[in-house]
Image (tube, rainbow, N blue to C red; front, top):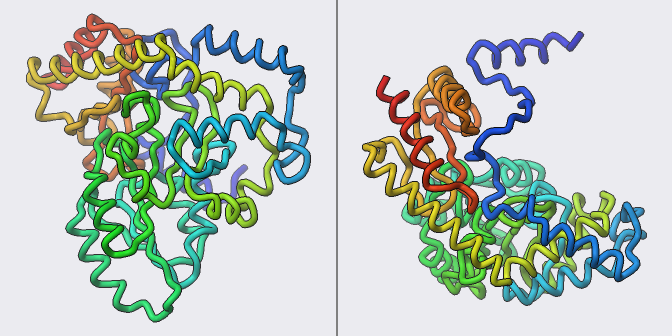
Length: 386
């Protein structure tokens, strides 16, 4: 038996059709996963990782401890050096996951007396990190620079500490909408007002930029960004994350970031998989996968337009395309119909998104064919019409 308060919470979720359960794996056409480039099942990356470990005699199953104890094997240095070069950063520090990176950064970097302004649709891991810290925080309207300007004007005047810092936080591609802010405009505003600009690039790395470096590099604003959070569990098809910034920021995180300090490091195999995914991303074959993904996005958007579904979709140029269908019951029902037709499309329910903004989230991949895209949208249109 659960404590009564916990049981009531579960019952409330059951009543409003938002109770989460672990899905059973089914062999469906994938419009659900974050494996945008198909790297998670890539045999070349798998084989290269194995050979690299054998050739280097890295025959260990685990790291044996945290990076500050026994787990800082030499492969970390190779990976972080690669990240510095690829992402044009001064330094890089690898974390075990995107969640670890975000709570590790936001719980320890903004200090008491500092201010954090964040986009209202920011990821839960960033919200959790901010909540664990001591700085005051305020949200601004989604992708709205004018609302951010009002917040800065309203609250910065009240700061009495000469050493206080103000942080502005956004995502380059939002996971629940697939859209993007005007990063360059926001970065220039932050520079003008001496604000520390932080960008989560989880859904942009591997997809945007000439080699998949992300939107910050595509927009040529690396020098205007205080810190970038990048993750490897999405387009790169493996696991882990990193924070990119100055050498001083890295040193601070090594000393004060609890989710970095108090956890066992990634195993050698995990670190090499990330490294090989980057090598593959830069290869001719990697560029082909990126082009296939871009083609899939173009086909999807074109079919949405021609099938008269555009009014239901949030505008997005990313691999995330969202169809708004109000109500948990309704969106779950249509997701079930898509599944019955062989397609895995995730229904995003409230309270994950605001009530009335429930949606089907279509994640596009390099391996989604035009025929699959046309068929899934045909089934979607039929069920929305009904």
